[in-house]
Image (cartoon, rainbow, N blue to C red; front, top):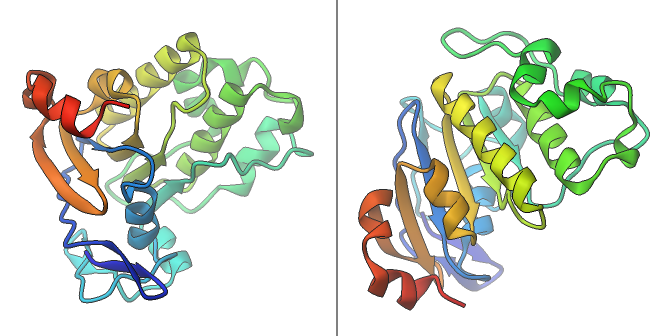
Length: 227
């Protein structure tokens, strides 16, 4: 994948591969190209001389809306909830038809994954904490019944307790058979949930392999992930 902002070359031959029931962590410092990678997959940034394949079909020429309809859910870094709507109303906004071969989500099923939301189903989005809003954004995206979920910096700005709850929720989604890709700077959080890791630096892949191997490589972590 090669992507540009204007004439500025941002991503250089970034290659990713993910199967059902796996979590891949896209790691790197600020400006490494993590968010651009997600935007390129979603068609928000049009990749050049690239091939993006999802479930056996190329999607790099699709519109963002068509990519979503094909089963990719995207949760951007900024929490885009409807603050005047209740939790249940926000979830209804995200509802899409059932898809064959992937989990079918209802509000009640999502409240099992995110019990905090079940306790405030009639609360307006604007009266929720940042962590609760993050969970609501993910739950609303799941109402589209995706088979691949992209989470951009899901732990950013959250308390340690909410981060722990988020990790548990992602592991439950993984058990449901979802493929999940997260972009993260929080290595500890990524280690709790990810099977694979890819490290980006200045738009280039510096590591691609198992999370277990990355955990054991202090030099790699120091070179590309430390502040």
